[in-house]
Picture 1 (tube, helix red, strand yellow):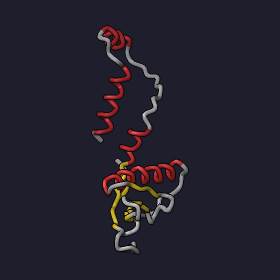
Picture 2 (tube, one colour):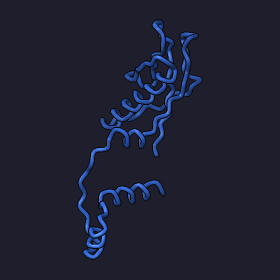
Picture 3 (cartoon, helix red, strand yellow):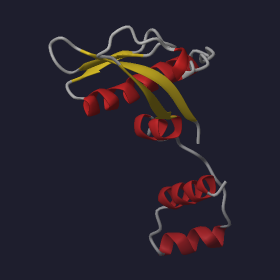
Picture 4 (cartoon, rainbow, N blue to C red):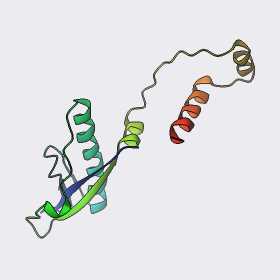
Amino acid sequence: MKQYFYPAIFHTAEEGGFWVSFPDLPECLTEGDTMEGAYEMSVEALGLSITDRLNNHETLPTPSAPGQIPLENPDSHLVIVQFDLEAYQKKHNSKAVKKTLSIPEWLNEEAMAMGINFSQVLQEALLTKIQSR
């Protein structure tokens, strides 16, 4: 499981709510009506920035240490935002991929007679295998 942690600055917006910037990822900006909403949006925005950079084979910047980030406005707050790449990929990349496999004929006949869903069994087995590593 790949986790990323980046500092974000939550700025109090004049019209209410918050807007969020990431000092290490200047393209990553978002907003929310409440602190909770802004945090949820910041996780999504961070995920988009990270996955975009990874898909383009760009290196990710090293997160700045929180003590190195100046807060220019007293209404701003520094928050560390966590991003779980595996959970994000599960949520946003559930496209089915066709796989061909071979099993003994007797096993196929028994499974077919029982009405077993081969795709479901394979997915469950793969998830169990992946989660046990």
